[in-house]
Length: 314
Image (cartoon, rainbow, N blue to C red; front, side):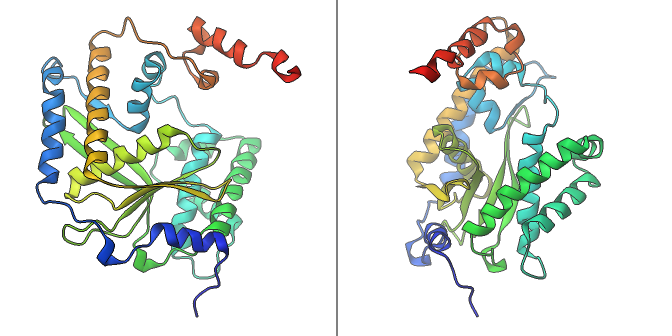
């Protein structure tokens, strides 16, 4: 018997589902046109890279170089794991387990199994989990259970026939690997059939909507189109704290716009790789988490303005 769904769960089904006859169909030459657009757009800059230099671009790098270039340069080296970074990985693993859980899943059990699996797995998060303090472990478990509980409340159980995949990696190698565009999608559902787009890409978010979240999903859609020749039907950010979708249907215009943003980002990444001496600075509240903050006067001034105690009196 089908499970009884709450109003918010029914809304999820309405957002991710669509009858096959309504799926958009894309031309078979789209894959080559998108790839050609990107390669033509970055070819001149790639030619300036030396034989041993390579550009790796994920959604964070593209967003950073379009934002604050100083932060982009500071983040080029992975800064290491933290509880907030680990939380997303644990939540996605717990959601993955929930698909094949033999009984009605309890969020705490899913999280405990996810942490144990990652702690003794082969991913680079394993060392962080093994060495973390009891306080950090408790905080990680608490945060992850909160988000998995919200997912369980808001989403119907993911059925196997929906082909759910968590943390799905996508990648596009250009110029024999001189430039690599890559990403990791929180949740994918469905599949393409012929030239018809039936897949949905979803990023699970806490907090509030940010325009950059949709840019990230468009980037994934563009890579997916280059990878298999058919883009997803829809992309969506899902905000667990709010129980709300922010969806967008995929079109050719969206894909070519994402390709141009990637072109501009990669070209600027190459320019900074060759000459990092004059990065553009763009301040925001996010400066408080920037690794460059101790040496960034603009960021420090900006944060003093954001944290002005008089704001609370107005």
